[in-house]
Length: 489
Image (cartoon, rainbow, N blue to C red; front, side, top):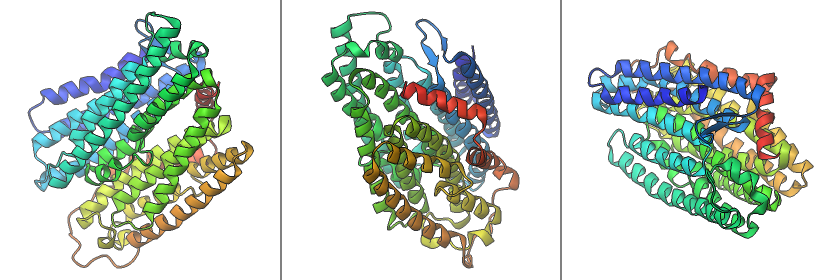
């Protein structure tokens, strides 16, 4: 019963937000409490899956969770909880400054809860058709969140996101339909034919050429949503204009939810034509993404766009890892968890920086460590984690990805990736150095910044980054191995 309760929580919370017409502050607390309860349920679900391997619910296992689903559910609920908890203060202060009206905030909490529900449905639905609908629904909810402030820039970013995201999701639909029609032609009509567990079970009877074409559509389609280059162009604009908690959730969890859809189809394609085709596709697209991120990182004027391009890099690394075999897949999943913890924290902090300095331009921010010591210290820690330095988990996962590349017979690609990540390291650290040090501007607004209690949730992010970087906790490692076994049986 954990699965339906897990999905009902954000749905009921959204219904309450939709019906509420008063002061929006209770909605903030209620939404954060619901998301926190969801994270506890995700931990319970993970424990159940470690014992039973697979958990299903409903007719034909309409909802179905295995190790891979459990990892994604943990990521979605953790990022959602932290974003709602920590982001409440910044939104409240924006309301006090009359930058956001009560109606905006009520809409924000309604859409954010729906966003959480659609992401959770995406990673627990057994049917690839329902999964497609749920991923499409994330586009609708987040498009309104990006344009929440109604500024011309926010509305432009929102429309750009809708247009590019819709093209991508349409391509994913074509891939899904191709796979389904081939199933019907080869196997015949049967109940729940779109369930990915059934597709994977009969994959060896499907047409390999059709599935290869379908996978290309799915990779490009869902890859657009995941921010894989060159389909990433919506991502920097959306992250620049969206409220910081929304950017936190989009970067920390939405991107990997789209990757999840690709990995689910990879299992079906691999069972039919072997792993070489999908691995090669993931390695090529992932390497291109890291290369594009490195090029675009050379000259950045906005720290929020800098974080967005960093997401393109890390999504690329996850793709490459998934194409490097079993060890690489395990590393990619660990990287997914570390990136979610680190990037969601940095996007939340970027909102505090914008609030303090009134700008997202790097040149306008100086002396963050002196002007906002706690925010600056956390931003530095998150940066070091994101750049893959020890003792944080991204150091372990990146080393594992590179090792998997060399062991798997991809020395040239691995060498190129190491050089590209080194280049990104240098540029990223240079920009952050400009933000953190120096004399704060004399005209820095004296507006009250976040209270220490508002930054407290980020201790959870740091704990995840450190715990998975020093010694990966045994239950998490078992769950990641279980998930990797789903992708590479």
